[in-house]
Each structure stands twice: as C-alpha cells, then as structure tokens.
Image 1 (tube, rainbow, N blue to C red):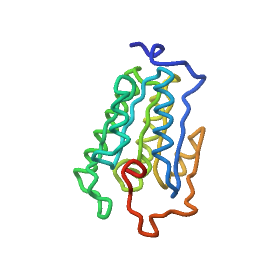
Image 2: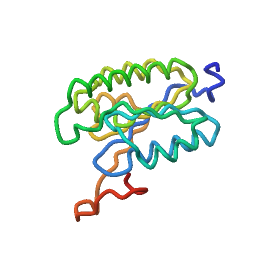
Image 3: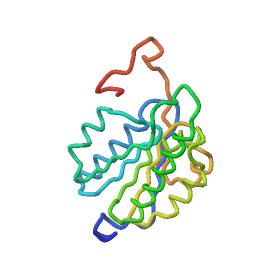
Image 4: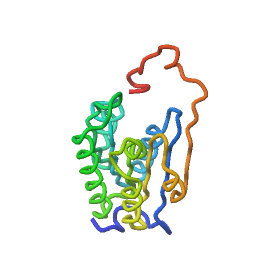
Length: 181
C-alpha cells in the first residue's frame, strides 16, 4: 500500500498530545483510533509501559483490519524503578513505531504513555521528537501520558490537558472492568 493509499494527505504532519493528571488520556486516543478506523484509515496503537489484557484491547480486536495494537511494556515497575528489560522493551517499541511510520501503511500513529516513558527514563524526549520528524504529511501522531515534556508541548499542534477535579479512586473505589480497565 502506498503512503497516499493509507489515508488523506494533510497539509502537514499534525501532532496531538493528551497529558495531565486527570483520567481520559488513553481514552481520548482510543476514541480517535475508532474514529479513524470508522473513516477507513489505518491506525498503529503503541502502548509503552503497559502490559496485559485491558478491555479496550479486546474491543480493538474487532477492528484488527484497521487498528494494529502493540504493547512495549512489562507493566511491573509502576511502584518501582524501571529496569534494563523495561528500557529494552520501550526502545524496541520505538523502533517498531518508526517502522510503522515509514511503512506508509498507517494514517494515525498513537504512542500511548510515551510521556510516561520519557518521565521514567525509558525513552528520551529527543527520541520522540526524532520520531515525529520522520512522519510524512499523511501521518497524524498522537502522544499520551502525564507530564508531557515542554519540548514536546512546543512541537505539538494540539495539546489537551486532562485535569483531575474529583476522582472516586481517592474514596477507595478500585479500577472497574469496562470503565477504568
């Protein structure tokens, strides 16, 4: 499939960032993935840090002809430091994201929790900026995660900050299947 066949040609590569301490960053990216698939576009959805079976992944399997999902995390250092295996998985993921961008097959490339990967030392902000620079005008880039680096915010065309105002988690409500996981 040629790059033009992957989707429409935009006047530039647009970069979207969903960041902040509030809930909804990955959910916003998933919504965009579904919208793109519904329009006939192909999506590469790369999850950094995360590993495991989430309800959204089960739902995305129904769109496997349009949405490719890959996980590049071991999901085990949420409450500890990242190890060499975590770094290796993240760097392998970034190589595959760059291949996906270069392939011309995808109109939307989502790097879920990429900001967190930078914050945890799995990737550098320079890695992300170089990845963005590889994208042709036919590819929309989306990055999610808390604490987006200033350089990434500067480079982005759209930035949405999710702000937590109130969350039932603080009252002891655990993550619920189908809602938070």
